[in-house]
Image (cartoon, rainbow, N blue to C red; front, side, top):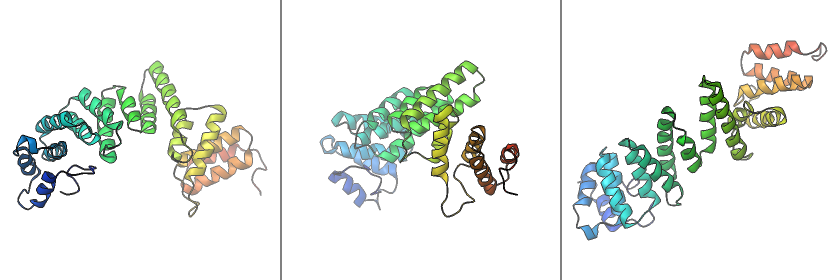
Length: 274
């Protein structure tokens, strides 16, 4: 219980330490939360209320968790309480309130980062399923811009409405352009972005994806085999035949691929040594 109560708090209230000490007696999250809430009102600090709210969440009593966390925030608004409250609202289906709480938590340094990201992903997935594009704003707010771009890209591929699909692709491309970071972004993120781009931008992103995805210890592996294939195709179009051949052969080392063979066979005679 020590690691869960008031997670992320620097100064844990004495009442919370007492709950931890009594963990052998208060064996369930609900019992521990009730014990806190039965204390005199002036004894309950915002930290102890945050702890009780979290314990009610653990006990799957989201309605009670909301009541307690609202009281905690009235005493002092923290990223911890807002995150827990956003989770509680999400569990009760109050999407708008959950979105507001999680967005508020994302702006605070004291929010429990991993917990916040899990809650944001879960809510964003629900919004996405409802075709509510506010999931993009939510993911961007908590620092998951590339996840938003990836989901939007996937949605555009599955959308039969051409105009809406094109708008989604363009919006996704814009997010990739703003969010890709050479040192931090993955090989897959660069490849996904390249599937939306054209010209030198597409070529540059494919090169980066191939470089980032290669395994120095095992040349027969690659994080994104599709990047090898796409870059081979781009090199063939640009008459960079030796590079196209090398990339297609690398793709074949990863596993069978008919398209890789097609690229090799399309190269002019003499590209490969006899």
